[in-house]
Image (cartoon, rainbow, N blue to C red; front, side, top):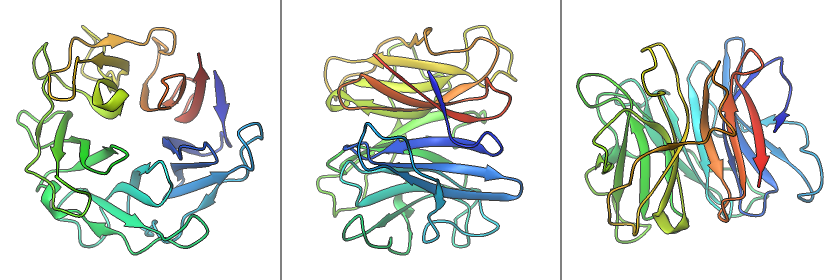
Length: 256
């Protein structure tokens, strides 16, 4: 595993374009909380300096959970910026090409509630979304899902993602294999309420079936700290995630 970027700031929520040349993430440095991007010329090169995506970041707001589309032209994120219903909403923005600025982010009102939403994960066709929400009682972290017929239509009413082992706290969803494999974060079995979790994976036979039992990614998890925010390549062989194992939240990557 390799730690990425300056350890003097906290880094979370990694998301890559399909070609592996743009990396979006959240940086927390003092009172600043911003969406960042780093670029490289090829996948063999090191990442370049991280810079603020000014079109997506608002001073004084919490902007996090960026999810970039494979082609790099659509981004989803969570924010409590002015215009938010309450707590934090899901927002989206687009750009005509990767050399042009982002549009003004739009609040995705049909997905949001009076609680908070975060960690959006949208399929390449922009027709299925999973996200974390605090809308269920008792208050906790759960993964909800919504769908739509085309990328230009409104989303369906969100509902809890179906688990074969019951509805249990989980967050930071990331789907691959056409919706059959889900990576996510969840609390460890038998862990105290203060435990912030490990990385897990669950699978299902098709996109309409419930997910099977969660399996911990033991080779990636550190039992003494928090591991979360997985991003996984389409072939399942490259992962980026957030870990506090160095003392504060940083981005790590691993391959198989």
